[in-house]
Structure formats: structure tokens, C-alpha cells
Length: 376
Image 1 (cartoon, rainbow, N blue to C red):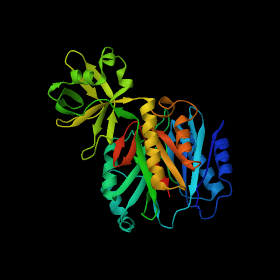
Image 2: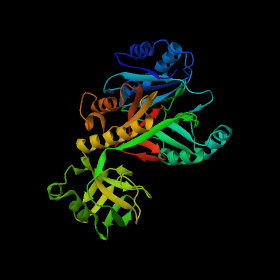
Image 3: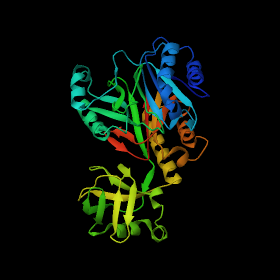
Image 4: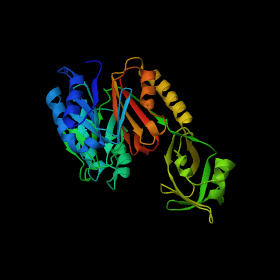
């Protein structure tokens, strides 16, 4: 089974959607042994029944997936309607392990799996994490380090119920299961890349006075004065609503400006020049201001796709895509413009995924990014 198989559908109820996906999967080869399923949040309460239908119709016992306000398929996005996307593939025997609860300690989790983990020098993992759990943000880098793996995935998004799938079981409705997913051995070849949705608009600054998430001074000057200079006189003249377009970017230590995490601007004090940012800040940290717009997001997505296509070759078997809720129709426009751009670059590669509350790449939690991984 070289190429993965997939199906995606919208419908009036969970049964119609699940069976339409199963119909599109068709006669699933006996060697298919892992499936991925993503549903929009209006079907979160039915994810267990959808998964059970896919297990029964496909004969595949192992499934992973989750809930999103929006979900992805090849060239197609679904928002605001009941929909699901399913994909199935074949992987070498004993080349993957599904997990359903990291618990409070990533180190304990890795210790439990030590014999299997030690059988491979390089590992790749897909995780679906619950943003409501108090330790989710800490567990991502902890798990990457303890299991010595490169992680991709995202924080579950929902306007109602939350749920994620591990094996044939659905968990997470109570918020106590922080994450689930699947780990792969090195014998499963993967190419992965990240696309930024925000581009820097000024130089990098040093935080010289801060407390918690408040920035008092940048480069020894009032933070707001520096901010106004970077955004320019037109935007500086009317700061109302500027947080919808301008963000704080934090270059990753040891990397260039191309790799950075983005966080929201939460507020500004005109009298004191203080800026509030949606992250804990430390003195000495580097920060730059970034703009989110369609042109820069399209350009960076095209750059990422060209690089990924070069590394993946002409015939990837299938892929998973995790994109920010701020992207999709909110950045790229309607008619599934973001997913169509991927399809135009890569062709009809079977692909599923969801729109996240935060995206995971390697050992970090990002925002306003798209993370694409192709199985080769």
C-alpha cells in the first residue's frame, strides 16, 4: 500500500458524515494499520460513534485524531458545519505506538516506553493537546526531550465539547487527559516544515525592564515609544484595534529571524508606555513586532511548500496539516484558499488535519503558523 487513502464529507448528522468518509475510503487494503480522523466541533460529542463506524467499516483498529473549529482535507476546509476527514495508511510492523495520556510527567511516560523508544535513534510524533489542561504548554517540550522526538500537532479548538482519539477510544471531554497521539520510529520517513503567518516589521529589540507579561522598556526606552516607531506614523496615530494586525515575535535563541514564536498584544498604557503581551517576559529577552497580512502569509507558505516539495520528492504517500485558527479564511480568504494553495503546489496528496488554538513544531508551541508533515 504505497499511497494513503482518504475521505472527507459534510452532512446533517454524524452517521451520514462517518459513512460518507468510509465510502470514500473504499475497500481498505488488509495491510492498512493506522487511521487519522478529524471532526468539526459540532460533531465533537459524536467522535466516539464516528470512530467506531470507521473501525467497523475499515477494519483498522488504530485511529488518532481530534476536534477543530475547522478541519482540513486535500484542497478543502470545513468551518461552521458538521464535517469529518479520515485518512488511512500502512506503516511497518511495530513502527508506531499510540498513546492516550502523558499524565503529569513526560519522563515517566518515556520511561514506560523506554525499550521501544531505544530501538530507534530518531523519532517523530503527532500530538493533539487539550489547551484547558494546566500543564499542556509545559508537557510539549518535556515530552519532546524525554522521548527524544520531533513533535508536530496542535492544541484542540472547539466552541463546545473537546475530544481526541487514541486507538479506538475517545478521551478528553473532561479536560483531564492533556494529550494523545502517535509516535513513529525512524523507519517511517517524514519531511516536515513550518510556515509563519506574521512577518517582522522592524528590528529586534532587547527587553530591558519587565514584570510578568508587562514590558516597560525596550532598548532602555519606553516600550510604547519603540513600538510606535516600528509600526510607523499611520498606525501609531490610531492604536485602537491594532492588536488584530500587529503582534510580538520572539526569535528563538540560536536561530535567525526566520524562526520565531508569535504572541498577542493584550494592551497598552498610553500614560506609562507599558505594553502587555500574551506571554511571560524576562529582562534580556529579544522581541520584535510582526504584522499579519495575506500577502506575507501567502509568500511564506509558498516558500515552505517549495522547500518541502524539494525534500519530499514527487510522490509523498500522505500528509497531516495543522494550521492556526487565525489563518484559513481569516487570512487567506474563502473557498479553501489555504488548502487549495497546498494542493496546487503538491498535487492531490491525501491530507487531513485541523485548525488549532496553537501549533506544535519540534518542541515549541507556535501561533499563526501552518505545520505540514508528509509521509514519504
